[in-house]
Image (cartoon, rainbow, N blue to C red; front, side, top):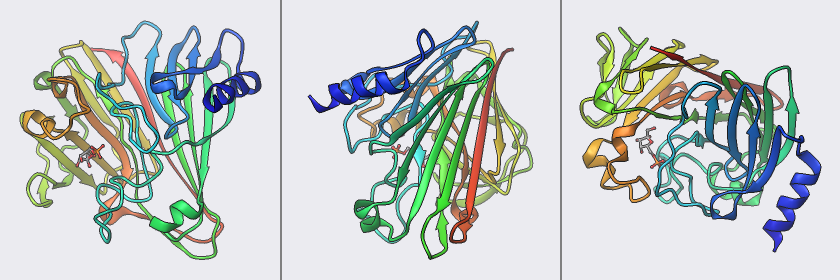
Length: 303
Ligand code: TA6
């Protein structure tokens, strides 16, 4: 019962009474459960994957598919998958896993720390023989998630090797919405984007982003915050970025959802991804020994 033992060990080492505990989540996978007066949240050791954030007085902010799989080697559908060290398909290897190899593996729980009104969960993963088969470089990746009145996510990459790194990264956040046709995204007006539903051709965003069809836009050279205006749930979700120069907006729409068996029936209508990222032409170059931190702060307010 290795997993049960590891959950018991993690609980003994990291639990904070009444604030944070480690329990068996879906599929029996270990998850950190946060319950404070300011917020509730969940983060799986699998993929260092945040799956829930519910600030006091608000409904759940993240979308989680009712049909997600919960297995080693498979990404959870929803929450905040971590994409690293490439985004989408690997350009030189069609057999490589989409969005890299860190969202589908167990990480290490390093700490759970209480600040004033928030709890920070830190998890990490490092290069090994398995990762070097796909990507022959050395790195340490840390994901810090701070659950409070806002959700702060930070992805820290350290080049632990002797060769320069070039990597893509994304905090692939699935946001829960009332009805996708009643959602607008503000903050990308005048920003150039590559439309992945149209051979990645370059276009210009005019005004707010309305989601009225399959949408897979990589907005480039933008550090802008993005506001998700959801009249269905009468709220706005703000995504404020740090050290991120691309923002990906994705909704599969009905036709794209057909190829996603782990997305619940018609649930494409209740989600939209707004992803702080550094992808495509904005991959990050990192010298040996250097560090790079990308962040996203998510806030929710009534409309
Ligand atoms: O971030 C948008 C995207 O790259 C889309 O192209 C779509 O593939 C989505 O990610 C989901 O990817 P996944 O591998 O999680 O099914």
